[in-house]
Length: 199
Ligand SMILES: NC(=O)c1ccc[n+]([C@@H]2O[C@H](COP(=O)([O-])OP(=O)(O)OC[C@H]3O[C@@H](n4cnc5c(N)ncnc54)[C@H](OP(=O)(O)O)[C@@H]3O)[C@@H](O)[C@H]2O)c1
Image (tube, rainbow, N blue to C red; front, top):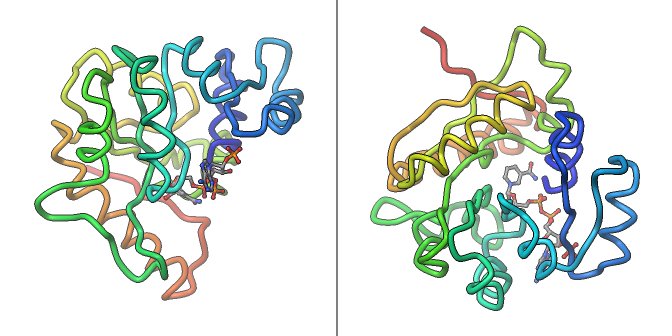
């Protein structure tokens, strides 16, 4: 997901810093993205970025975020995680909370916005090919300005943002992503379809 988003944001002329535990890997990943993009450690990437995309497994989110807590103060953090259990048969958080809300608790001074969690990586990697069929991306968060920033990024890569309200709405956006997983793998539809809100 991280590399697909990096590719699409670079295509949309944003400066992208690929963060990784392995800086050499990050640099390799950033190279084809163009001169305005680079690779860095998580710490360096967060320090330089205006918007941070949390593209790690939900189970690792806390250990990745804790050392970055101070550096994330005031930053927009895009939570794309799905709190899947170990065998992908269900969610480890739901109804009374969500991954997004749990992540916000870990970084209380960051501005967490849920987005992209119901978009499969191959769909994202080919965002520019959807043309008039543009998929929807449900977004929620408690900071209006942060949400507007993420809405613009969604539009820039060629999808349609749908504001689903405060961060608590992640309690419903995350199960929607689980439905997508169940269809893709349980029902064997594959990860090459997307949600679209129609009127
Ligand atoms: N795959 C999808 O289609 C999809 C769709 C929607 C949402 N999501 C969500 O997006 C997030 C990323 O998904 P993904 O499929 O891109 O995952 P992935 O391929 O497993 O990549 C996750 C990255 O997390 C980093 N990481 C940091 N700490 C880690 C640790 N302790 N163990 C393992 N990896 C660690 C690794 O990057 P470095 O080694 O470079 O640090 C790794 O490449 C997940 O929360 C997932 O639920 C996935």
